[in-house]
Image 1 (cartoon, rainbow, N blue to C red):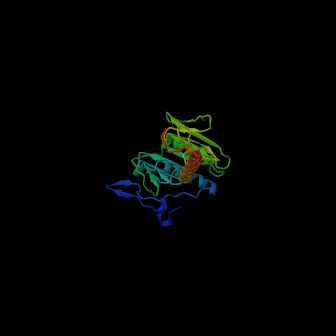
Image 2 (cartoon, rainbow, N blue to C red):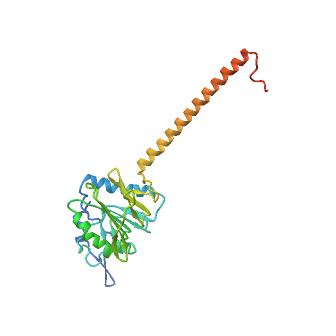
Image 3 (cartoon, rainbow, N blue to C red):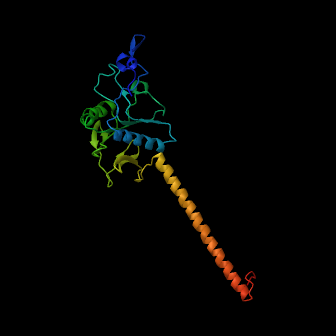
Length: 251
């Protein structure tokens, strides 16, 4: 969501300290909304899966459709918008209005995912890729089209992006996340190094409930088996008594 007009980046005044001009330190994100509901759901899916997987960690920041401010000369001089999804490692996991590189120890994203659309695909494949390679030096860059399912990834080697090669399942490896990215039910998802799907919190809850249900069913089946066995023993004992044999007498 764009900030109010009085707080847009064009009207924020820079501070002068001891004659040194410093960029503002409290800037709002200035991103347009995602193209479609499908794009929004895909961004949220990536975010909640990673947050759920790393719920015990506090050393990363993952978000989507948030402006990254990185120019201390002219804050919007570059023809650039924020990534649809990105992860910064080695930083505090806390809410932010935007990502200001000069306020974040000079850190840029370690991983970026752009969601292609008719209006953004050219920029995502061209200008943004160039910025992520040459300026951000982001090690892992991926793009995915939620409509056509086009999926591609790159890893930075000696300052240049090289295509990532898919495994047998068509998944691409992220060295930064130590996870695979790949398609599942026509959506981009994370997978463990062993190829296991990283679940959403809802999927985890459903799996836990399914396991609990299976355990209850197993326990009930065991109870019924024990009851059948008890009734069988009682009938056998009654038959022995009819024959004058005490079934409780030890042999």
